[in-house]
Length: 137
Image (cartoon, rainbow, N blue to C red; front, side, top):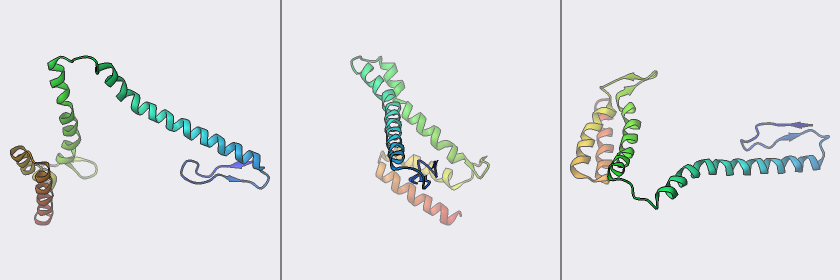
């Protein structure tokens, strides 16, 4: 008989004394095959949706308006990810317009617009965040 203890998390299955070696080998071969198929499936699900449009659109020229629209997607996604963290605080999340994150984001954004320097923006952002944490608490 087979007792399974925490499969999939690096823990080996436990076998009772009456299990034979052939059963153990079949079980381990099955697990290896299952993990291989699982990894293969995850790879396909990850890369096919990225690869298909690349192949389909690489031989075509897109209209200018579509290219301009597609150029806006990264900024829109980044904004959607960052804005909730800037204007909410606490658990459960509540609107908070007076927090260090939002107070620091304004000057850092203006610095980034003016200088167009990624390295400078990171350094200014870290310095202002440290300053806000120490001065404002």
